[in-house]
Amino acid sequence: GHLLPGLARARGIDLGVAVAVDPLAHDRRYRGIVEDHYTSVTAENTMKWEHVQPERGEFDWSGPDAVVDFAAENGLNVRGHTMLWHNQQPDWLAGGDWDAESLSAVVHEHVTTVMERYRGRVSAWDVINEPLEDGGPDMRRNLWYEVLGPDYIAQTLYSAHAADPDAELYINEFGIETAGPKADALYALVSDLVERGVPLHGIGFQSHFVHGNVSEDLADQMRRYTDLGLEVAVTELDVRIPEPVTDEDLREQRGEYRDVLAACLEVEGCVNVTVWGVTDAHSWIPEWFPGTDAALPFDTAYRPKPALSGMVDAL
Ligand code: XIL
Image 1 (tube, rainbow, N blue to C red):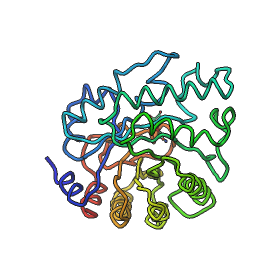
Image 2: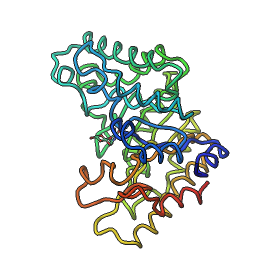
Image 3: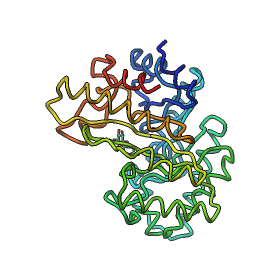
């Protein structure tokens, strides 16, 4: 064991990690890192719609069950990720010929089926993922918006709440970690939902940062939501470094990881900091942001990086 889980629990937060089903099943070192260093897990992909309901009415529980069972065996909490997202939708959904009635029914059925299955085993759900345009501040013109209108968010939250009244229901977003039009737009959207009494309990700050440009007002942005009575979490933390990656970069990254964790600890109502992947060998970063790398606390050889010590420092 390592000291991180005990320290995190003593400070009253979860320290989480995004996991992939294959290495979790087949790679003992990968599994060992998760067991030794974290207190919660998020499924990096396998709880997304395209995996859970690849054909209409046909649910595949193999991946989600593997993650939830692994968590139960190891005493870890689970963040459910995610219900409505514009990416990783099955073709039958993305290309379907929907009207408001048929799409509402299919959303309700999906959310209800998945959440009821994991009732009591998944404590928080990213019900809505990335509702704003990449650069903000407008609402994203996704399938749900186009067919159901802006109230798709409230509708889906009501379905989720009915399916599992004990689950913490989140809106998860990126680009809201620093003050600006997108951060303000999400705050306005959330304030309205809270005012209307819609069942919404938390805001996820994805926190996909670039080295040298990590938010310096993360705690302030979080406090706006905790002041509304919501909880907050850092849900997808990574800090990608433009190549070539130097030792100095990695030392500076240590401070960046420390600062993000410290921001969460500073905010009463920040309940979780989750890193988006187990090692740099498993990170989505090199593929999605070519020319950057080394974004996580373990390197490609599964060795702890300075960033891991940064998290210990903060705790
Ligand atoms: C990413 C995964 O890490 C990749 O493996 C996958 O190919 C694409 O999705 N915001 C989110 C996450 O909410 O679900 C995304 O995860 C990263 C961006």
